[in-house]
Every structure is written in structure tokens, then in C-alpha cells.
Length: 304
Image 1 (tube, rainbow, N blue to C red):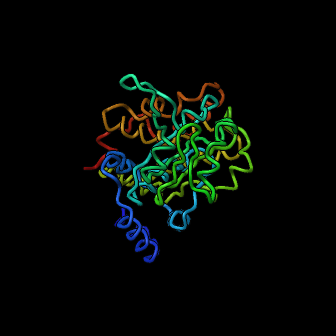
Image 2 (image 1 turned 90 degrees about the vertical axis):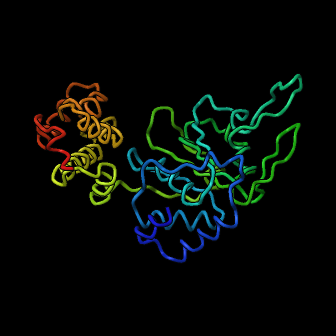
């Protein structure tokens, strides 16, 4: 990851401080299995520098923005860059305080406290990724207030007070306008620094495609990138819904073409079939047909 950050042009003093952080806070043996190599890399020097600086200062991050801006990918990249074990905590309307900090359990006839992901992240110096934080109820998230402010601890009623490890950080992600989302409580929002994630640029999307598919033809890689950017533009102007704006789906479609499926069938599986309105489906099909021919196969798409 450090070599990747150098390639991205991250300021040398930030990389040096990152190295010092990693050496000062080595991960404990019991948490080593939670240090993951990221599946995808996030491209964007400005966002990287802002996030690294904030985390080095001990701040917690809130990553906001629309769909397909790479919020979860970036959170995973940050944990890897800092060499931290990570816990992904998917939040919903059904999330309660016990599912975050832990609850009682029976072990060998004894009532013991079973740690939740927030407690484990706090104790082991991990990065806790609070996914879709604005889907959870405010009363469930209230247990995080003490952990996220200057007190840096979690008080568990009936048990003990857990001080946060000095390397612990929380990274929350939040989409706008999803069904079931709500306004984030001001008391909670004030405990984060906020990064508004930008839409992926044409250049960075091309780099992502070529890194994911090393043998892809530059001509067709560019066409797939332009297709995604056109979907992005139509989504921004409300001509189509965000259902079709699916970068994971686009990458999956390219992978399916590599397995031998015709391009149009692969794109139907990855993008078109996620839209249920007939008029909208026709718009998306027309966009795809204008750029990607039905005859495109793996022999043409992949040169190596």
C-alpha cells in the first residue's frame, strides 16, 4: 500500500508519518487475521491526503456521497494503509446497542460478556467501518458518542469501561436518498470530520479497469469507461435511476465476457436487469448498444 501511495503522489511527509504510525502500533496477534489486502484500490490523491491527515490527527471519518463513489473501497484501503485490523459493521433499522458493543452469553455455565464489533475494534486498535450509518436508529448509535469524542472510551453497564486503543478509529459511510435512510443526528455528526467523495474520473476509472483486467484492449476499456460515465451523467440529470449506476456490475460484466458470454448478455446481467422500469431499461439498452457491439467477445476484448 505504501508503494501505491507513492505512485499516487501522496506527500512524502504523510507517508513517513504513516510508516511511523504502523511501527508504533503493531497489530496484536489475535487481530492479525483481520488485516486484509484490499480487493480494489482507490484512486484520488486529494481524498487520500485528506483522509490520512485526519486519521493521523486522531479524527474519525464520515465518507458521504452518492452511489458508486467508492466509499467502502476507500475505507478498506485506509485500514490496509494504516496496517489495522478492521471490522465492517453493517447498520440497519434493526441494529441495537447490544449488536454494536456486545451482550451476555453463556460459556461453560457462566454468564460472560461477548464483545461486539465496536468493543473489539476499540480494544484491539482496529478500524471500525460503520456502513450506512444513517440507516440505524439514533438511540442505537448513542452508544458510540463516548467512543467518538474526547473521552475515547466505551462504558458498558454492569461490566467495565473500555478505553479506546490509541490506534482505534471509526470510519462511517453514508449514501444520500436511499430508502430507509434518515438525517444524521447532529451530536453524532459533530464527532466526525466529513469527506464528500467525488464521482470517479474518466482517468481513474480507466486505471481501475486496466489494473483489474491487465490484458484488456485499451480501445474497449475506454468504451466501457465512457459507458459508465454516460450512465453517471444521466443519473445525475434524473433521466435514469441510480440502480443502473453500478460500477461493481460493470466490472462483473467485463469478467463475464472474459468467461465467454456475449457482451450484451453480460451487460444485461451486470447492469440492465437491475432496472425494472421498461422505459428506463430501453434507455440503458440504447446507451449500451451505441458503445458496445453484441459481437464483442473475449478474443477481441482481451489482447493478452
